[in-house]
Length: 272
Image 1: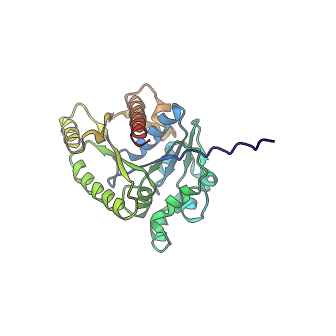
Image 2 (image 1 turned 45 degrees about the horizontal axis):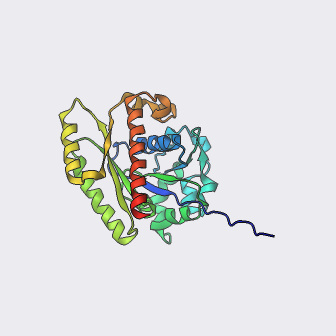
Image 3 (image 1 turned 30 degrees about the vertical axis):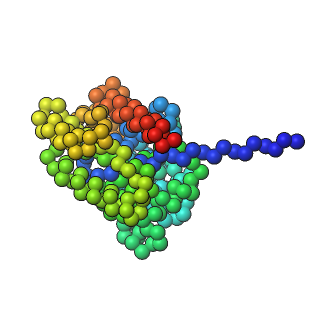
């Protein structure tokens, strides 16, 4: 009698951290809308809300009362992704939520073994099944962000088109280089995403030109415009792609997802 075929192991998810130590640059908005756009084309996506503010959870319509387990339990209770993830109303998109417990995590992590690798270890306990894992980082370069960078394959940097953008970005790049040397040699900058772009403002064009001059093709061609629909969507607990798919902001995130997938295909061809 022939033996049963061996199960095919699930392909490893591509893990992407969205990070910038500056707040208000569109990290959370980009995380939930990029995740939604990838899910819409059939990719299995997990969003990890790694920010004590919990805005990604709110933006995906997960009420505080529905966040009994989440990222805190993933970091400290040795649970798996499957045990702490929550399904969203969006097909193919799950979330690991954040709640108030996470606010003390930075202090609690200080004296824990492998404190920089708690998230990496937790994701290793997952059975797979996702194509992409997007980690929404807090606006600080503390231990929560360090955990995300240590676990990630790549970091994407949402960058607001404003005067101080490059100054903060250079600091983040130095941090990424330190993380590569000390904790995650394979970490790469997966791209810079220009956000809150105002075509009526010459400053936006100047910042965009400076960033492209510094990072070259690491900067995505798609820019995310200032758009009132993008700002309104979180108050309705929806990504802008569900709130108003025809809006300029929603269309920009759809194009951004297309660029991400195109880059991923090129990377896979290059590295096999």
